[in-house]
Length: 225
Image (cartoon, rainbow, N blue to C red; front, side, top):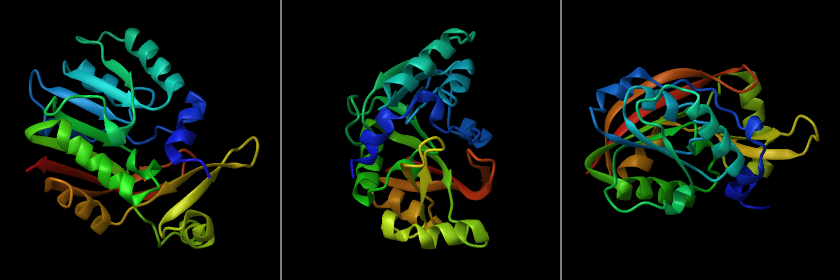
């Protein structure tokens, strides 16, 4: 199977799901003039609102088409500063050390099927953040009380090879489109503290998926230590 990163780079921009709304708590960690990195920015759903607040925003993604969509949409908005959108892989970010004040990952880690890559991505975010910088993550949580998700976690395990992961299929072809991982609280917390961060904020939430289903979610903010 080709790498998940390679798979996402080939998906049509319009088919990349962007359903989670930005949590207002992020603004507790921003300040006038701060530089924000949106990792896995997709069509700019997070980058553009942050830019509209007057922040300097850089979005990075592996998908060329979705970056073009983000650039086009951002130009149609009255942003005080138009976001910069860059093609790049989150495991090897194309930015110098200590370049940003805040990094954002909105429903991004769910697309990363390799535990090793998740660790690399968090370490890269830590590297490009300034001392005491903050990493904001919002992502899907495992929802075992739901019969639908419980069955998917179990039935998809032979393909996903990881508990809490599910397979998403292309609606037109029926072929495997991508694998999505739903996290436990423990997974996300350890992912941060084992890769350069201390947890400053944590919230249980509920998110809506691309198909309109409700699923557990987490919002977590780590501080670079």
